[in-house]
Length: 419
Ligand SMILES: Cc1cc2nc3c(=O)[nH]c(=O)nc-3n(C[C@H](O)[C@H](O)[C@H](O)COP(=O)(O)OP(=O)(O)OC[C@H]3O[C@@H](n4cnc5c(N)ncnc54)[C@H](O)[C@@H]3O)c2cc1C
Image (cartoon, rainbow, N blue to C red):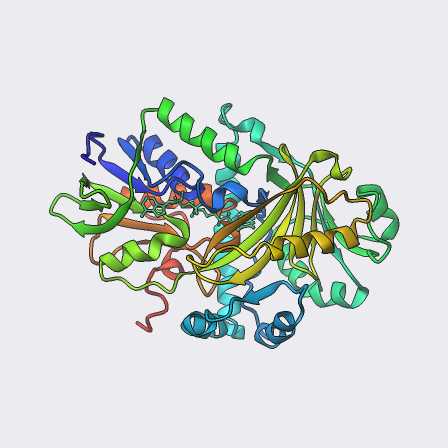
């Protein structure tokens, strides 16, 4: 492939993070090409749950979490699995995860995530004013359900942290739960409801509409696979799988779970892994679903989308190459049927996606040291859609050498290197 785009900024990766980075670069007056190896929204941005989870500021690595993991792993319907043979490869990632769960690091992660989410909410609000995208964003409200008073009370400190960060919600009991979402199992007597819960009604369609809006605004999309990046005097050179090259003044690496390989080509090691997630999208007629439901004791969500009802979540560690194990999706559907007894589970479409996950559950938004014109925007884990617009803003600020809207110190790519 020969570069004929004449771009001065190339964003590698056509997922939601890459497309949002491209949007803010276009807004800043840059000539942008998105380089995507297969199609826009080919990765995790296609099939996610669509939730704009701005209140999710509490980092997953938290004090005591590592003691819960063995129980989850032993439970066949549990929220966590590790594919046989992958555990050893995961050891360094888990080491960093364990360190991130110390009280001190947890508190710091909370502060960093809260600042990023404030920016995320503000930037998404600005993006949804674009009339080409507005219809995708809907306000359904969020119902967070707990199996018992005990688990509800155990989660109370996290809700207090969210309240302290400015998010609004209230506790609801059985009667209000039944009004907010009829048809749930009687076990659900304790929940939190937020009227503010936003979501994207069609995550894949939203990403594609965003890419189309960028083309209208002058950006181009090139299909090709980047295999390496090299610094040049004027910026950076991208080497492509077909033997071609692309030169650009600024290069943004936004390849989701696949970003590590390109960082490595610059000699930069990042402990990025993937938390694989599964879901099933059922026909809209499967259940009279009114809003997003979080089944918090089981780590899965059910969301009403324009394409139907999506039931999914959980985490499987198995890297990028092993085939999907759709028993995980079936397992979530069985749980959903138990909790929503009227749910029709036939006729669904199953999907697996690769969450790009850093051990501290914070993204990498940074500048390469080996090639200062290469910017990193990956590792958003469970929250990439939610944080996409904020990441776009921050990448454009880095590209323009401006002071970033949030402190990026704890989002450095080398934050685990001990330096
Ligand atoms: C089951 C599940 C549910 C989720 N639910 C939510 C949710 O409700 N809310 C939320 O905020 N987040 C959610 N997420 C997380 C979210 O989907 C991800 O964080 C986000 O999609 C990551 O976006 P991305 O653009 O970084 O990566 P991706 O969407 O994976 O995009 C990366 C792109 O880069 C391309 N690419 C890779 N390598 C190369 C290369 N070498 N050259 C060129 N192109 C390349 C790929 O083809 C792909 O299109 C969920 C994830 C899963 C799996």
